[in-house]
Structures are given as C-alpha cells and as structure tokens.
Length: 200
Length: 187
Image (cartoon, rainbow over all chains, first blue to last red; front, side, top):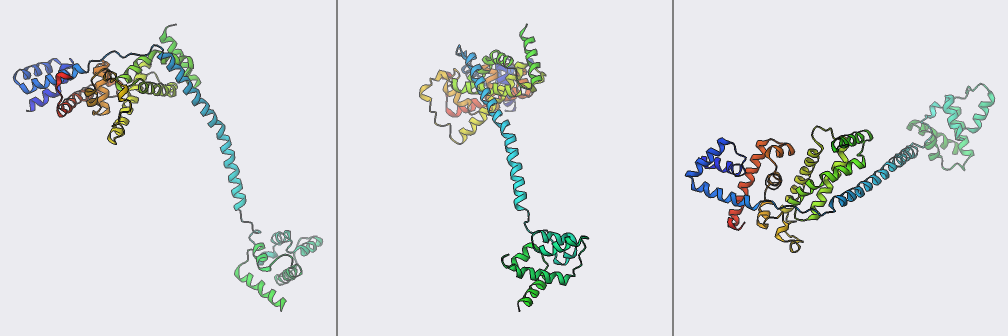
C-alpha cells in the first residue's frame, strides 16, 4: 500500500516525462504487478488528454486596443494624481487655518490671571487699568511720572469698589470682577463684603 | 537599434525620470501582451475577464517599472506579475465560490463548452476545485507547456515544490472525477 501511494505521487510526473530515470524504472516495475495502479494510470492519462491545450485565439487588433485602453487608464490616473497634488497645499492651508482658529477661539478670554493682592505690582495694575477697571487711578499714576504705586491694598480695594459703584453701566458686579480678575475665594469674599458695607 | 538595446535605453530613461517612458512602456505591452493574455485566457472563461486581468497586470508593470532592477529579464518580471495577478484572481474567485456568489453563471447560455479553455466543462468544474496555486501550476505545465524549472522561477518556489503541487493537483482531479462518477473515456 505504501508503495502504491509513492507510485501515485510519481505517476503524474511519469506521464508528463518529468520523472527521473530511477523514478521511471520504479513506476514501470510497480505497474507490471499492480492492477490498481494501472487503473490509476489510465485515469490520469484520460485527464491529461482532456487538458490538451487548444490554441488561444487573440483578436487581431488586441495589442493596439490594449495600448489605447492602458493609456486611457494611465492618463486618468495621472489626472487623479494631479488633483491630489493640488489638494495637498489646499488641505494643509485649511488645516493650518483651523488650527490657528481653534487656538484663538479656545484661548481663555479672561484678563490675565491676576490676584487682586497682586495689584500692587505695577504691571498687574496696568493690565486692569487697560480694561478700564482703574482707569482714573492709572491716569493719576502716569501723571506722577515715576510709575511707582503708593496706594495700599485697602485703598486699592476701596477705589475699586467706588469705581464699580460709580459705573453701574458696567453690568453686574460679580461677573465683572470674576471676568476681570481671577480671584481666590478669600479675595473674592473680601471684595464682596466691602461692596456690601458700602451699600449698607 | 536592437530591441534589447532599446529596452535598456527605455528602462534607463524610466529610472531617471521616475516613471515609465511612454514609448518604452507601449513597446513592452506590445511585445508581451500575447503571452500574458494567453495565460489569462486559459484561466478564465471569456475574453472580457482575460482582458481585465491583462490590463491589471500591465498597470502594475507601469507602476513598478521604474523600480525594476533588471535582476531577471523584463519578460520574466512581467510574467511573474501576471502569475501573481492570476493567483490572486483565482483566490478571490474561490472565496466567492465558497460564499455561493459564483454558483449562478449569468453568461452560461452565451458560452459554449469550447469557450472554457478549450476543454470540457466537467474538467473545468473540477479544476476550479483546486487551490489557486495548484490551478496555476496545472495551467503553466499542462496548458502553457512550461518546465517545472521555469514554473519554480516564475512562482518564486522550488522545482520540487512545483512538482508536488502538480502531482497533488492531478490526484485531486482524479478524486473529484471519481466522486462525480465520471467516465474517463468521455473526458
């Protein structure tokens, strides 16, 4: 049985003249004594005969038609690539615009993060002055010429509260303070209390 | 100038400009289309499919021609691309058969049995049940008449592997015919 299995593997090569001389001798000797393998050979011979190739007919103009068809496909491809190449800078610009816009729009809009206690620092003071919070004080300060602030924290609070009450058109006080200075809870309470005292 | 010299010059030009020189590419198409088309015509049932596969092959040639290193002849390289394209097609076709998409042959009435690679439809039906590589080895050996050495070179395998594939393919065909109860004399 093992011999039959080996011969069945060799038979296709034997029939297509691809077996070596030794393999041919082995197959021939086995076929002489094995009817099952002889039957197997007949089946393979019939299959081989059925696979005999006919000549493939190629349309006479096929070569020229193929060249034209390929050229069309290639031109189409090149045109698509050109569109794509044009699209690269366009998409890059669009992406850059979106990036800049998102950075600008998402940037916190509050006035720089200054504590009210930091108002004695000149730059913080002037930042607030820019938005009109201590406009009058800024003018005084500029007139003094040396840029040094002489106001104490309490005086500053007091002026701030007065300014807020003298300018009621600047909407509600809580939101104004919260948006113009990023106060700590303590500072915020202190200012609110002062405002309440002024009102009372 | 001989064709070989023209091809070398055309290839060099393609390498320099980065994409195939049109004249060189067209010449390659005209020189190799017959062998490529014949391979596919033996593999598929009609001209349209063979034409599609031939075009697919030459488009791949176009895309990769500038990268071709001339380690083998340009003919071998193109034929190898065709064989890989064919194997991929047969794999796709087998996958479709498994999900039943190819069970209905819409063009069956238009096609005579002689259209199917010039062989009987029974044989074709049986061959379609072989693996893609086995089908390709059968086509290359039995229909195209290539030696196992050439087949091995074209299919990136060894001569022995090609022989084993061929042998297994024939054994499998015989088993299929036995299961179908085919009379071998009628083939």
